[in-house]
Length: 162
Picture 1: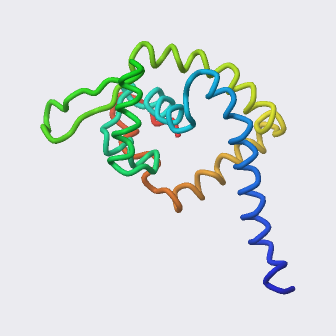
Picture 2 (picture 1 turned 90 degrees about the horizontal axis):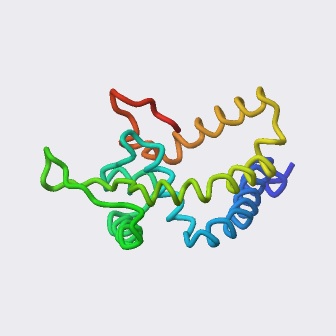
């Protein structure tokens, strides 16, 4: 076997193809709701976080954006009324991005179609044991390549949904 035939290259190629295909499939749903992919990711991360809020630094870590990048996204979502900033009561340097009622409504608008797409192109093809194994594998890989992907997601009052 030569390096060009290495199954590791096949694994990376398949992963890239699946990601590109899924992204293309999801884009019309987000676009119809007036959201970009990063807008949706920001809203869903806030919606699945304790108290539906995250420190701006944790949101940047979770999304993989720079602090200025996440500031621009939150600025845009705030202008649209989907997110609001809250000052941190214990640290004047920190602030939270918090999902608004309009942001929750926007998620409820997008989620039925988004979940149907996910079921059609991913989870619906797997039985429950395959899905559990797939999720375990994805978490294992995610924890290595993006260890900050769940930053700020845990608190004493709410379970972590990753």
